[in-house]
Picture 1 (tube, one colour):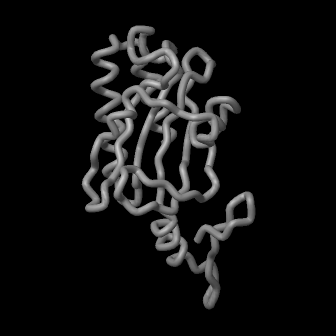
Picture 2: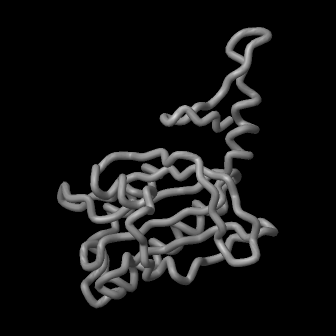
Length: 170
């Protein structure tokens, strides 16, 4: 996720149509990675793209997720997303200017899909030192549990993953 955020900083001076094309390709590629259920990057209006891109009260960007069959699909609202004030995945990194691991939560990408228990890993995107957006991925707890189950620091031991709120995640 850090590499996505840093790469976005590097394309900031491109014209908006070219920037949109590169952003879309980067986020779509990240969503294809094993264990990633979604990838996204959203920005404050007028800060990464020109003011004519998107709607003033929304967050332009790109968002891709895996559907129930594992196919990577675009979330159309991701291009001009309405992000409510409870969305910790966006607001923590944006307001505090730091990387964030969001506490485990359930989410449904599309109506009719089962909810997924996951965490979000987000990184602020900076331009000229100012935070202008957020890049992130969602990882299912099922994937984290599989990864954690392979860790055996000493013979007969096992690893667990506990969130900051003391939720056993894996």
